[in-house]
Image 1 (cartoon, rainbow, N blue to C red):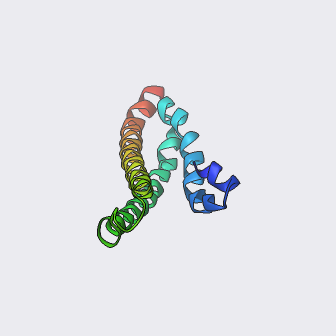
Image 2 (image 1 turned 135 degrees about the vertical axis):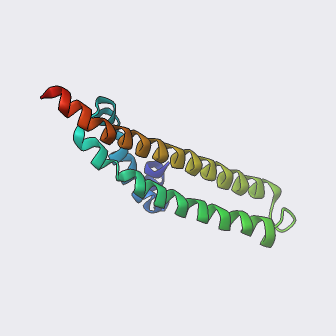
Length: 124
């Protein structure tokens, strides 16, 4: 969605941090699966994911409050109201999934860190 927004209307500029994060996380999965020692240190991207998605959820909360309180279906066309509400809820759902993903990455990194002494001992 971010790349699409970059191409059209320039709205994708708001998605640039998410695109950078997705790029970093994309290349983190394989090293985590292999248990590479440096992979756990690179899982710091998950902390950035938490921060970014908390900001996204905050924006969604403001938008939901705006739609729920200040604007009602009676003050705007019903189709537009439903579209905005659907967009807000879908973005919030994606942010929650991303938060769960970040939590799992942190757990995987912690498991790799805990396993490193045993792997080192078995190699020597």
